[in-house]
Length: 393
Image (tube, rainbow, N blue to C red; front, side, top):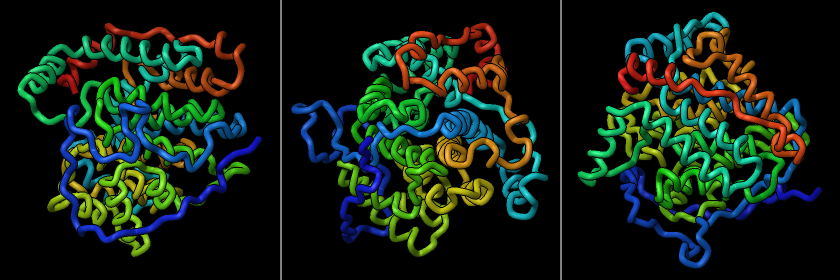
């Protein structure tokens, strides 16, 4: 089967400012793009790698498990208090990874959105139009279990406040990461699934570009230890050539220079607009910083987490994405010690998640497997109790 894995588009770096302003994300504001949305309806993106490439089932299972568990653990670490994050960072820098106990890791709304997305994928039975409707229904159902937070988001929307962060399971970047591993081996239309999923909650072309960045980076991660292995050293340049957004391309130019100079994730965060090491939970910058950190530490998740934990602020999004990419590459075995066993997914369990992983391994390689695969039952009462106990986090 022919692929485009060896395709390396030419890159040309241009002058760019040392620090970029945060992109203002509004649903009515469209950033520059090389293709008019009125003509194609699709965001401009050049596929540097082919989704049609088949990878071994064992590696596929490892990647899916890494996506689901890694994102959940990263989000949980981002939700720890500042003192606990500082202690964890100190231990990551001073102890062997196997000796580090992070305590109970409590996942939040990004993980719930991730699991809802997997449910929608299975319900769709490989039809993208069905996927969009099922995901929309599942997200609406999930949001109704958080009435206080849902009303708060509605008020902010009515007041016209800028939406640059994800709420109530609506993080399109985490969904894009999951779709990348689930769609691997399907066809090159995987980006259509990513775009449809993103636009359900953020009809903004910058955010769609960021989702494509994460989905493509996840491809690089899951090709690890296969015949199609791709070096992470050229990933930023490939992404820079693939994106249709001039604003994101300029940011990638700066990050490529920083990576070649060996700059840490903290230095990269300053390039993206972080002030005094305080990170804002901004969708586009979350994607860029997570990918940058992954390019620096693809095989050493402890080092990548330690760098990101130097930042202050809301780290749930960027840590979820980085940990997801790193564990897609390494598998869950790349996590320090017994971290997966410390993960709390109430009202679900690790066995519930493992059943989804097993069901998705051969999906969507064969029609018989697709038709036979079904969703696991949800637990709405338990979810509602959990949301009450966690303050609707």
